[in-house]
Image (cartoon, rainbow over all chains, first blue to last red; front, side):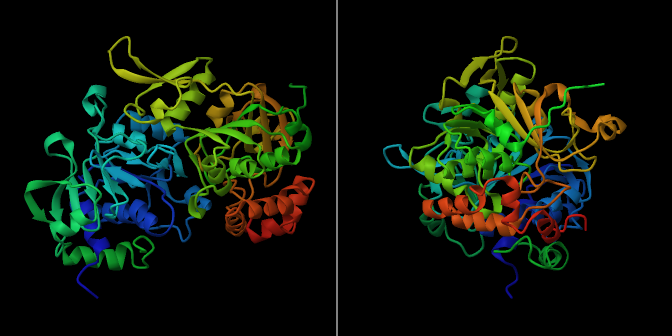
Length: 267
Length: 297
């Protein structure tokens, strides 16, 4: 087995973004690779952070605050969320929504059918070139709230030119700019998406005009490989770095304690 | 002592809904959707419906498969682990079903505004998004009179009817939830903003049982027009603390829905069977279902 997998590298990269005391919003994403991106990587990253530099980081997952991560359910069916030991089960979902609006969440994770250069996300519909509906997607859930109110939203997606597009077909969740409309004019409480962690590189939006910008390349990956896997040319940070590989102890922790049965990092 | 009993049959409750009605459904993703009620609407061919929900999917997908859904307004329509809602998706892509997509805070604001009789509620999550541009009858950008901040005004949802699946109720319509449950939904808010509320429950219980634990009443009888005993009324989805998801049945539904013909066959086999009891019989009956899903274990 190699020293680390791409998933372990991505989890370690996400873990470095988590600060002590952060409240982390984890979704309940679906199956296959989508589960790994929306649930597996965020949970593994949170536990890596808790075990190292952020012991007081805690998570919200399935309407539960601080579920006991050492006792993860065998099957992700409804009863798992009904009976999982945790510190608090909010009295109804609107309380989670209030917590979002009140800017109580520090970290959230996003994946989407499309993301564009300004960090707009689309999980609602794919259109034909004339703007008519081609494919109906899931809707919108609370993703717009994440980009509007969370302090550090992290987009977690694999690079793919069909997913990383110049302009999303539909703005489910507002990033930094759409046409002539800019984020500043709305004075939203959250700063907008802060990182994009992918299978080949990590991006931010910290450069000129908030365009998606390559911040670090994963070991062995070239800038050409990254841009070839995107539908637009990203900006490149002047201090472009290599994504630090996970420490050997981190890999050991993931494989023996956090995810020994590969329930989280499945694919 | 309350005196008006409100227990009706599933058939009589559904018959109150006229074609073309605007109906709010309770439940959230894989839990407590009003599936038995939707199946009864299908049996009675009550169509041209507008459905409002939080995160829905299964119930509206069956209505879509039956050609009875005109419009859907919600935060999600899907079958979670089992993919998108197949018949709903087909109907939307064919232009047969209108959709209004709103995020969680946006849709809850619409339900919540109705709770105290207000016509709108301001939120911020839709600023800059295309959801805010879908329908000027529902969203309008506005400015806070105090701070000058931008907001989106969300129009209140004032449904003709509201349908919720709950746990227990007495004959007067005092609906109770168990002390331990999964609270990840907004059923009580949806109920609070209702105009004519129908509640299906797992079990009708004696009024004495309600009086012994009045703090568990989340929908008081004063809001309720009719109450119906429908065990496994959310099946094949879960009714948390009563029974878990029936994965096998959900998987079969999702597979059948891949084609319009498959969805129609499913309706023939499981819905157009006369009654909810006959639906349960298609799975071997209530006792067999309880045994298979480990109820009471």
